[in-house]
Each structure stands twice: as C-alpha cells, then as structure tokens.
Image (cartoon, rainbow, N blue to C red):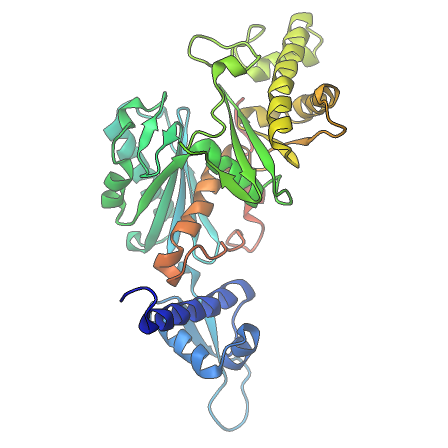
Length: 397
C-alpha cells in the first residue's frame, strides 16, 4: 500500500483509533463501549471495531459488569490485558548487569541482577544477557514468547545502526551485531543504546528531573560522562557522542585508564567517610574533587543553560555530602546571575535499566499498537504501588 493513497490514509486512521482505545483502557481502566466512545470522542461503531481488533490480538478482554439486574443483555466492560506482552530494559555494565521487566500496562514484574563478575568474553556476555532475561521472565511467570521488545544500555558509542562503534569496556562487541544475535536468542527485536544517554532519559522521564525540559545528567562512577536532555528530548549529537567527556576536559585525578583516582582510600565511599571523620588528607581530597566537578558542571551549564543537573551513578550515593557543597561551588563559579540546581539521582543504580525499559516501550509501540511511540504507561508494582520506590538503592560506591 503506497503512502498517500486513500487506502493508506484509512488504514492509518484505523490504527490510530484502535491505539486511542487501547491507551484509554490501559491508563484509565475498564470501560463499557459507551464510556469509551465518550472518552475518546469516537463513534460507537468505531470503538466496537477497535475493541474487536484489540481482542483478536489479546490486548483487550471483555467481562460482564458485576451487579447487573433486569431484562436484556448484561452490560459488558472491556479491560486492557497487560500480560499480553512484556518489554525488558537491560543494563550491561563493566561492573554489573541487571534487567527490569514490565508488562504492557506498566506493571514492573521482575528486577534481576547478574551474580558474579561480568564475563570478559563477548559470546559469554551475550549468553549471560539471555539467561538474565530468561530469569526475569521466569520470576514474572511470563511465557518467553510474550517478550515483545528488549532494549540494552551498554558502555561506549553506539552507531545509528545499533552496533557499538567504540567501547573501552567491551571492545569485543565493537562492530558486532549484538542486537541481532540476542534477537535470535530471545525471539524478539533487541536494540542497543549508550548507557549514560539512557540514564539521562530515565531521570527526565521517571526520576529527579521529571519537571525539567532541559537537564544534564552527570554519571560519576569509575569514570565520568554526561547525558543531555533538551526541550524534553534526548540529544545524541551527529555521531551519537554528545556528553562524551574527554579526560583532558576533567579537572579531577585520573589513572592511566581514565578512571577516577582516589588516594586517601581505595573507594570514593572510603574517602568521604574519612573526610566525615575529620581526616585532613581526605578532607582536602574531597574538596579538590568537588572543585574539579564544579568546573565541569559550570562549563556544561553555561553552554547548555539547563534547569537541572542530576548526579547519577555510584557517586549519587554520597547524597548531600556531594550535592550541597557542589551547588555552593558552582554558584560561586558561574558568570551568569543564576546557576542550575544540582540534585542526586532518584533512580540510583537502576537508572540505565529504567532508561532502557522506557525506550523499549517507545520502540515496541508500532509492534503493539500499530502507531509510532505512544506514551509509556505509568510504572507500578504488582501491588499497585510506585515501582520506583523499590529500585535498587543499596549499592557500593
């Protein structure tokens, strides 16, 4: 069917109407045909046709309304069937791997982490991802064939075709069709993206920056990198390299691998705890680190003019011990009459996986609804509570 033809336009309108009915049921709950027609502004025959289509695909079920009395056919209500499909957000990092699985209604059905070190071998790493997704499906009691889409966050630059261009952590995945190999193993489309970009997207959609259209996400772990959201959209740059901070641009101590170098203790947490206890060397090291990060934030902030800067990654665990003095340092350095607010990540170590999950919802939209990138559902736990209240927050830094 050629785009622009009458048949194409009719088909596109039919898909849009069907998606509108599906989203109304998904987000607002069960409804009778008349209620759905009023809520969507569609005619009753259009709604009935949409419900028949959705029912044939398993996305909608119809039940008799409880408490019906009197003569005539019992009133019937339609409800969205979230368990008709699942999407997975996967974080494949150098230090760990995790999967967050949600059904199509936004119920977070499982969160699992890889136990033990991340495999050094590329093929073994692919198999570890497969096993982790399979474990999430098992915990959710979800059939493997209902996995609709999986999106994966990885360290490194990811090309527009979904292959890794450069990755210091996973060099053996460079140029390899990792998504294609996993798609064969998982039985659904699988795509890859830069991990920091996904973390930035998660904080803007779900986390600390939900009210900010323009924000910078600064991931501080063993290395430092940034993600940018401007006008509410993730910005990748012409080579998908936006936010890749070179070592020369960072005014903090780094080793020969470009990793943060701590001297008073072996970990950031150890240094901050020594500083809290009054150790003079640790206090000086923390002050120097904050001053170096402040320089980076000021350069980025005066270039981009964000509403908010979110500190994510393992260093987000430092909380006010980092954020308060960093806000003060940035305020003294900016040459403008205002400074961005700096806050800690809400999502912590789960930010990459939640960003991947949100993109999995985006990218599965045409497969599920027949239209491009419908809004993702609100995430919740199986008991109806806020899914983000149970994110993994107790992690090492």
